[in-house]
Structure formats: C-alpha cells, structure tokens
Length: 222
Image (cartoon, rainbow, N blue to C red; front, side, top):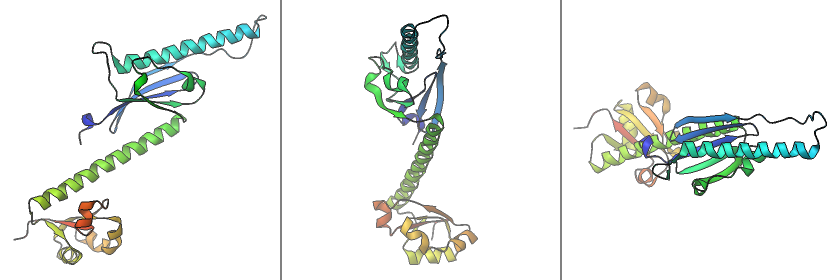
C-alpha cells in the first residue's frame, strides 16, 4: 500500500500559548507550522482595574484563536482550487483555547474531534498509530503473497501440519505463516536451526481455510 494513497490528516496541538500543526499521512508525520503568543500574567500595574485587565485578556484570547484559525487555513486550504488539502482535522491539547477555537467555514466540515491530551501522549498515540499501520501493511502483503501462490498453483506453497513438519525437518522452508492458535504447535527452535522465519498473522478466512499454518519453500518442488 503506497503512502500517497492513504488519507491525509491535519493534526493541531494547541495549549494556552503554543500551537503546532502537523500533516499526517500513513507513517509520515510532518510539522507544517508552529506559533506562540504572550499572555499577560495576573499582575496589575498602576491601578489597572480588574474589568480592564479582563478585557485585555479576552482580546488576547480572541486574537490567539484567530491566529490558530488562520494557520489552519494557510496550511490546509488551497485558495486556488477552493478545496481542503486534508481529509480530516483532529484538534488536540488542553485548556479553553482547544475548546473554543472556531474553524473557518471552509474547514469546519473536516473537523473530526477535539481531544484533551498532552503533547507527550499525543506523540505516543501517533507512534502507536504508525506502528499499527506498518503492521497492517505488512499483514496485507503477507496475505496477498499467500493468495497469489494459491491462485497460481505454485509448488512453493506448503500447508497441512504433517506436510509442514516434514518440510521443516528437511530444511525446505524459508518462511512459515502461523495464526495465534498455531504458534505453539510448531517447534520454533527447529525452525531457527534450519533458517525458517516464523511470522504471526491474523486468522483470516484464507488462513483458516489453509489450517492456520502455511509454509513457503526455498525452491519449487519437482
């Protein structure tokens, strides 16, 4: 599966004073923008009244939300084609800015969710997503390889526990695919000794049909 065929997602990480935008597609994550703002602290000077101080804070907050919205438009909306360049937008972070930032009319339909999460956790979630995506891609490739060998009637394919065990003892297999239930039925030490790689795969309909264990020979049998 090619990366450019996967959905492109815009991810916004926003806090009270910082905002970072990422474009995620498959296992590729690119930071496309970062902005920060200075917020006045709670110290009032020169008799500055509480209402006046609050008005200034509110104005700063509104300006910051506007900046975040403009950043998203600049990164993910093509003004020439009048189309969004992502298939969805996820907003993550913490605080009222996350909750209250209003997306532009053009990008509003693409908002998937707002989630409260810190930046470290967001990175962990992305790492898990990338790992799961890579595992899923490899899984698909394994299943497609087995299906192709089966469809072509290739003599490289071996299935059935008796046939597999015999082929392993003869050092005839380079690869064996096993469903979780079949993992313990194969002698892993023997496989390692003869250079046969064991790969765990999901129990799909294809694997169940083949008994949950499939081997691939080094060479076609005569």
